[in-house]
Image 1: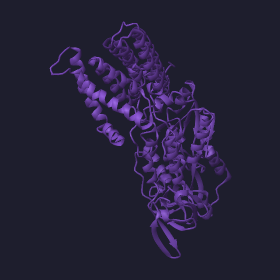
Image 2 (image 1 turned 45 degrees about the vertical axis):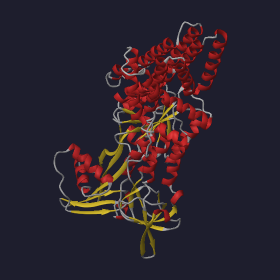
Image 3 (image 1 turned 180 degrees about the vertical axis):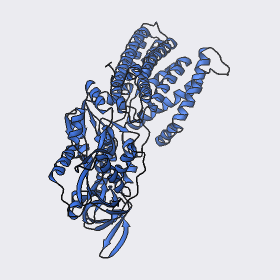
Length: 636
């Protein structure tokens, strides 16, 4: 019986609530204007459409789990008002309470499918090698010790070690690194990462539920279960409100003998303005955030964001652009200008399938209008680099192993210069011409133009910026130095980010995480508030976050932090006002100055004041945020 009643109350969802409120509001207006076109009072339309669901919800909560919410007091006041013939008061109370419930429901996030998308990253099949026989089997049947073959473009089905072959692995799913990593025999690979090119055989060490990708799924699930939704202050205090209201009404009846005075006390005790205080401010702040490029997915996300003490940044794609770019070209041959060397390198990489080779070509073409000539000969060597012939000149581009295997010596001067760039987090492609080491190209992930000013403004709000990245220590330290971030944690796998934030929050710190990659999903989930980069971020990171930065304009982050704090101040003002109004109205009701209808109108006026105060948040800070670039906003 209770299950059927619960399903009935949930039927129609938000559309039903909007329709019922629209009809009830029109009926209330007619009743207020004393227009009665029906054979019964039109206020009864609002009582039935808005009041009956409230009473049923209260009965359901009491019967199922003795759950006393604000609905209990509202139901008592509704029934009492109807009994003494104050239909308009009952209708007005029911309408205001349902309006508050609708606004609160609209701020609650919809069900998300991020975990399902994360599960889908695990490949459905694997190529098991047994001697000379290759068999395609379901991925869940892979066991530790199995020999597997992974072809170009395929996802690695299990954690393991490469037995033979050279390849390049995109590890962004696990580390967030923008640059692929070359792998060969003896190197470890993780499930969920993508084989860029070059087939290889591997021996599985962890598969199924023990694999890296499945551990990340469990982290996201556990973090999601521990994050509480918004709870209105009226419901938190509901038990005390109900007890005090009933005791006051009963005492007034005993002392005065006037039932109408007791009913008035119940009416003015109804927490209408209190119910509206939080959701109206949240919705107005969400509207403000939307104008600044944020999509707020969780109803209480801004409430949680207002209390954070640390803002944890992922590096790649968040503070940087997330794509490799040519940072430097160095020539060590006196008669070979660097621009000419750059052109030869781009020609050599023109047919390359390696992401770094493609980056060299893309970056060269951005600065040149002339079309690159096709090499006369081309050879790609997986895990090493490329060899080509152009205009009769033999070209070579790759790593030191490529040069060593071809008998070319790289001078110490070139090595030392390359090591300097590598210490700054760059990836280096060594270049050779006509059997001589000619120089190198350094590629890196470049900082966003507004990153430095954003970090500075975040620190000015009193929030401590932290860099938490899967990139190696050199790259992380170099970027942190440029940005002025003192706390840096590098070489972090998804589990490391999750564990760091979880441990830090257990020490009563509040952490906000901002990231863009799949590897950031567990950290986004477990953080007190999670922000995802919407433009370049993965769908899974977006689904795991509470707030999405749609435009990827990180300049707006300081405004969001200040807006969240301003919203909380508005909520506190609303709550203080509504409780003060309730107290005054109760005193007037006890003295017999207010009747039920007047009490309902006082509540209506209080609700209007709360809504108007919240509306000011819609445009708060807008003029300040449009100040010249770098000027930022003044603290409220």
